[in-house]
Length: 553
Image (cartoon, rainbow, N blue to C red; front, side):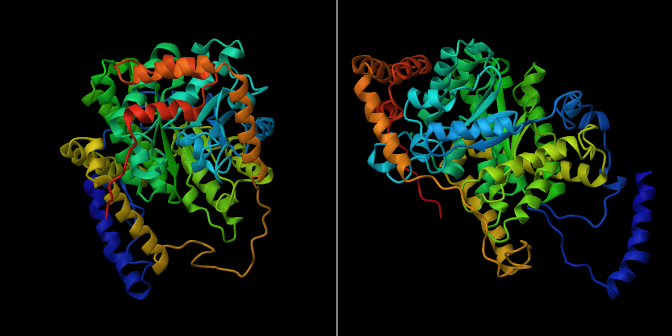
């Protein structure tokens, strides 16, 4: 059958296409995605030896190419989770309540830079950054206000926090206890993905080994105490935002997952006791078909890795569950209304790729924090796809399309080749330390920017169809009084709390940090006594040291 189609296709190319091309060449000599060349036409002949049961099977069954649940969105829609946080915890609490009122089904916390890198708001390095790119959290006092009036057993909460993840998770646990919630029933996610910080994001504090120890401590603690919690969200989003292409995003993210599992196994944890609590986080870029294929390829490749490399027996260990955020780097300051259309296409690709939760960027995020109006439009985009488009009524509707299946195969194959190279180097930590990952991303980022600047790649409103219109949007601004208010509240807290208890708890952290015991219980004790993020990080800095990056050229 395929041989007949191959012959027929060759005839079509020779008799129909070639004469036309001689008179009317195609728009480009080569059509490409971020990582693949796209063929003029795909047919069954591109899927030689295609084994449906081995490559696709059925939703909820290995290798999960068509989705991790048997009914997917026919049973339950994805969680609509807008990433939000700015100013004080009261400011952000107000935004959360607004979003929930608008129909959002999960929360996602953005923290400011001082919180992310372990400095209190009154530290000199925090000056000018308090509450700017996320909410400022110094202590349990702030966390209590952040979730005031929000029952944590009724909503799932994702927290984008890494170097200080153990401290923030400890605060969340105490807030839940104060709401009289059984913490074993808490569901949500803590990002806790340190490796990508060294690759792409930069909010690391400690060197890789102690960072991986903290990551492992959180995973171990969650496996015993928070069974419904995603103990890690391994992020390809930030890798993509740094300039990686789609294949690299899949390969480097799954390689990070392999590295974390290896460390957990080395610490004495069994694969099937922890892997079901691993989740993933991907970006969604502009090339619609490539992005749909990327999600399907990632799911299939991870299932194979878990089964063949780690010999997992639990199907839940083999399921790649992921959150998607539409890619912020695709937004433009010029003609910002165009961003609504970009985000719609990206969100649709994420849904057709089978995402479990989704953040849609707001039209004004290229220039600042989103206003209530723009974040409402972004949320409505998800709701329109979910409830008006009809794409959720059947599972994996693009499955079986020759183009989608060929792209899925290609991404899986190329990502597997990258993972093999990383294995040869000695794993992801070694590959980061010798600069391999960073160099690969830098080269892709260079090629991407070059394509825009030469006009090979079109960005509407930037290098084609420009206008002289000035930006009209009203920007969300963080008040200059936020930092003063936060510092004042921190000083009041330190004057009122039991400082002897704080000092004792922090000393316990220092002691355990020097030993081979899980740090979570002593961090929870310190947090409960209102020790601050900065105080806890300072003692860990003294024990672990601070990471100094090597320069990669």
